[in-house]
Image 1 (spheres, one colour):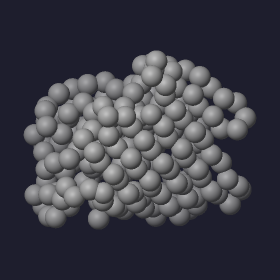
Image 2: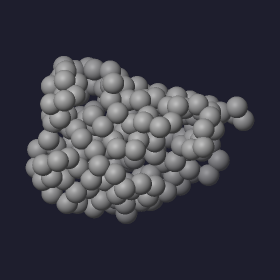
Image 3: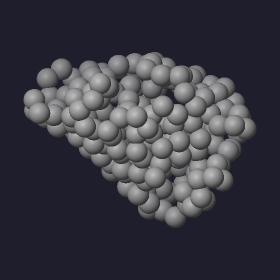
Image 4: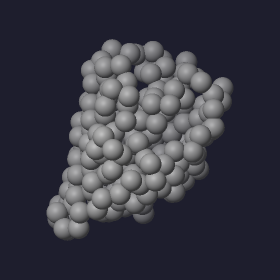
Length: 199
């Protein structure tokens, strides 16, 4: 399901790599350094957003680590706004329990059996279930429970995403949008309609 029109971005598979996306209609960019070993992902990224109808001006940085099966082990997120800074740490233990710590009200939950974290406004995090479930190589329809993080306030809740894959790409139904994505051969987003494109 690669998109030949994307040129070198579609065929590149040299790791580590820096992947960068530009929002289609908002003043926002995301850039992430990705280390990939088998199904294990280690990523350090940043999202910068200017003030617009969708959000106030903010910057967010994150560090993600998955296990050898592509299951999220730990995500640390920090945001900076004019009103101040926030941070949250999300981790999953071997028994499937998630711990969300934001400095005030720690929360422990299974989040419906979630194995992935998704962050609103980020095309990168869709890669986690796509790669873990092999949707970049096989066509299937699947519902994926996730730990869903909103930006820029870092609120966290249980959510479910639906992925429907086919020869023309993957359709994603999330709590905030219904859209289609195209991916490269490694399962990383090239274009997320209505959200961002890789540059």
